[in-house]
Amino acid sequence: MNKRGHVMNAVLLSIGLGAVLQPTWDVATAEMIVKLSVPVTLGALMPDVDTAFGKHRKTFHNLPMLAIFMAWPLYFENLQYVWIGVATHYILDVVGSTRGIALWYPLLSQEYNLPVGIPVSSSKSDLVTVLVTGVEIAAFAGILYYVWPEAIVYGEQIATMLP
Ligand SMILES: [Zn+2]
Image (cartoon, rainbow, N blue to C red; front, side):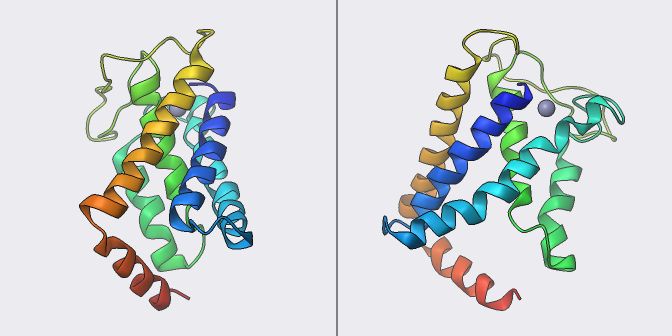
């Protein structure tokens, strides 16, 4: 997916996640959306830096890199939520486009892909981006409310421990 697709995915995902996490439909919901949207969008733009530095779809498109972004806020106490943008970038590249990403780089250079998706240049890429984002939000809401409702309690407990 191109930058336009990744930004659209990040902004729509932030709106969806904000509404799921703070479903009061008031100022608090808007605040949650704003709080998520900037770091998530920055995270969604980060992996394609490897078009200029390193190997595209490898250097910054792998699970070790995602683990670094997930661990970063726990250790350095900044960049919270950026990992969400990195993760959704990977999902959109794997699901929404015809070329995969090297999930285990630098251990393995093989690129993994799902047999769905369309070329990045396709006129339907906006539609695919919206569909993938909708599935992401639905999956997140489903996990949070039906599969693992305790996650909300755990999340609140972790939030109180963070600075
Ligand atoms: Zn990418």
